[in-house]
Length: 56
Image 1 (cartoon, helix red, strand yellow):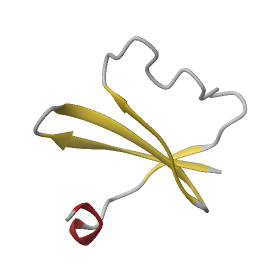
Image 2 (cartoon, rainbow, N blue to C red):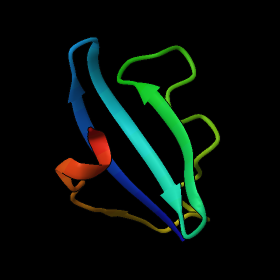
Image 3 (spheres, rainbow, N blue to C red):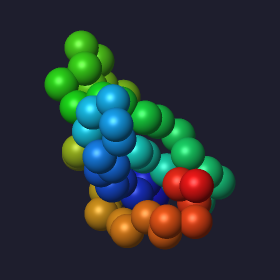
Image 4 (cartoon, rainbow, N blue to C red):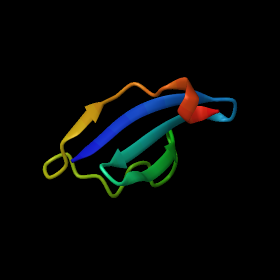
């Protein structure tokens, strides 16, 4: 199972993707290969909230 959330970084909006083991992908929104390895038919994606401690 994959979990996704967006993060508004100083460089632009990022899509963060993780599984139960950890971070598996980071993409800038609109990037050429934006989330190209994710397939909505085979991947269950849920939006999750990031804790501020994780980002510091």
